[in-house]
Amino acid sequence: MIDFRSDTVTQPTAAMRSAIANAVVGDDVYGDDPTVNRLEAMAAERFGFDGALFTSSGTQANLLALMSHCERGDEYICGQQAHNYKFEGGGAAVLGSIQPQPLSNQNDGSILLSDIEAAIKPDDIHFARTRLLSLENTIGGKVLSQQYLAEAQSLAFNRGLKIHLDGARVANAAVAQSIEVSDITQYFDSVSICLSKGLCAPVGSLLLGDERLIHRARRWRKMLGGGMRQAGMLAAAAEIALTEQVERLAVDHDNARYLAEQLSLLAEFEVDLTAVQTNMLFAKVADNVDIKAIATALKQQGILISPGTTVRLVTHADINRADVDTFIKALKALL
Ligand SMILES: *Cc1c(COP(=O)(O)O)cnc(C)c1O
Image (cartoon, rainbow, N blue to C red; front, side):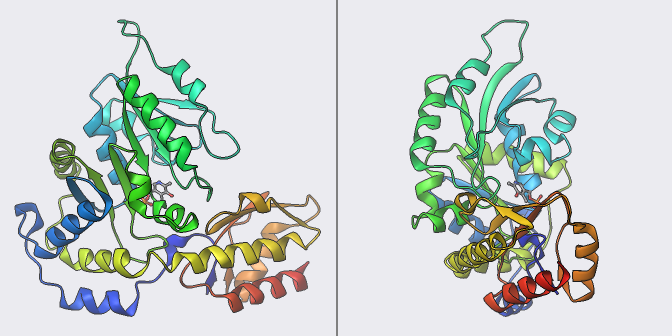
């Protein structure tokens, strides 16, 4: 299958499978798993934090961050398009009694600093306590500028807020700018990172933060059923995601750009090429195209896309340049 639906579909690499088979493991709830401990220590060091916590998913890492920064009756400011507002089942509200305060995302994915300022509630019994600003990078495949991050950080600092990054694809953001992941994470009090997307690990995310935050998050993780036992089986692959898969993301970015360029040559698809900055692109489909029928026909040829009035296409390690050509050729024939 050539699967453009998401980078979550990536298969673990041969090196990962071998590391899983040979992992030295222990009971991580007792803190006894040397492979998990090594992963967490390496991630904390590499990304410039006191501590790191290996979690079962990005959703869990974000929820742990929100619940560790905020208490019942607090609120976090985020984008309307934020994954941890829109796509995580309302977990912060359901499980944390934390109110989201979503604000419009601009075209570039940012939230206007003036909107953030205006949304911070005064210290008054009528209001939830604004505690946290949560940003996402990349967001919809787009990279937030380093200058914006610096400005958001000082706004948060000056107004007494903590600042969290949903960095599910922060490695894509770093590679796209030819900078280190730590150049981005330096602006945040906590960061979540997905290892199971473009980085190819089978399972797992990381939460990064200071000692106090990680300690709180570890408690919530256990309560939420995320305390895993011989988790070193997964951490072994996760470690390889960080050491061997980050730089390779540049290939995915090149392929996404190539795919976007090819698609934009077709009258039936409209792609904003300036928005194609990493491994993801959005193509607006002309009204006269039955994209559902096309998706069904493509599937019979071993090509998977998610149909919609706008189609999101994602490149990853299991898609190469020839696969993109195969897709474009099949698409042209169907059109
Ligand atoms: C995928 C994703 C998550 C959640 O990760 P899961 O491992 O799927 O729970 C969070 N934030 C963003 C921006 C994502 O793309």
